[in-house]
Length: 462
Image (cartoon, rainbow, N blue to C red; front, side):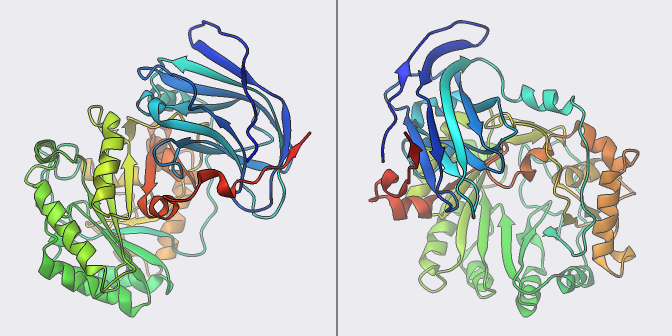
């Protein structure tokens, strides 16, 4: 690994305060291996204000037909990226955004290859480090105010996000729009024949997430549904609050070749957890995870994932939670921003570059309706969206998804009225988004004794 020396050229004060300017011109040709690292800039020698966001401004020219990924990796977990996004020749004003909570943990600016077939070419002219008091959440409304062309291809096959089988839950989580303390609770549950119709439309080898607007483990037919998925060659996953995961139920579930068990846990402090997940106890979750890890000797292929919604008072505790769950031997930990007012988001990781078209999928709901996205899953609970397709109205569920896409493409549709104000489009990015940050503990365990830069390839033209 050849390090490029970086000189501090100037210090400026504007509405955004400039800390340092780094500069050394170089031209790079990447390898043709996907995600191969090309060049890095060491940030560990600089001291940043941990109360301010960091904005990294990059003067970088990317050649036509070239695609690169630029990111900032974690000092503690060097194989995880705090920020990472793709760029191409159309990107001329590149900004990397680091939330103040992560500033103390930044390690390197990394440039890497985003193409699987070609050697990408780009040149770096100047890198500037800026401090900012800007609230990243405000960027979502700013982006929504700009003109945007909505379009999605009409599908020829079913793209299932999840099957939410029941609205019934055993907890009353404070942020929940379905069963929280201040919302109307419902008890809709899918019929067996409706779930069968969905599974019959899917192809063998596909993953299927069983979840709920309540909790999937409250559905008396859960074992039947997992068995039905197995019989059709599907790979079942479940998403649950985890409080009902006792040894007897875990033994039963694992017999259905589960690919993943995702458990929602929003704090590692027992008292705070109890305040958020009303009716739940953190000790029950920890007991379940301990038993799940014990069962991995018999079922080594399933994964344990923790899903954590971040609040204003927990956003800066992410590294503390990483240490906690790493010690508990879970496979991965995903942090996500909090949604509010059904379609808005706050506590995002960084401002998105621009709005993107949503990936319209089929979200099958306990009341028999089909939603095209997370936003409408929530909105339809709060008010009747009678225009959503219903499972019972279609012989072929691909046609239902096609109708949802037509609504998305129609500027005069009821769906479009929701889209105009919505923030959920953030999740449509294929890689890292302002909505979610995933920590892969397995990757870190494998790389623990391996130098981070040992596989980085540099192709610098002198």
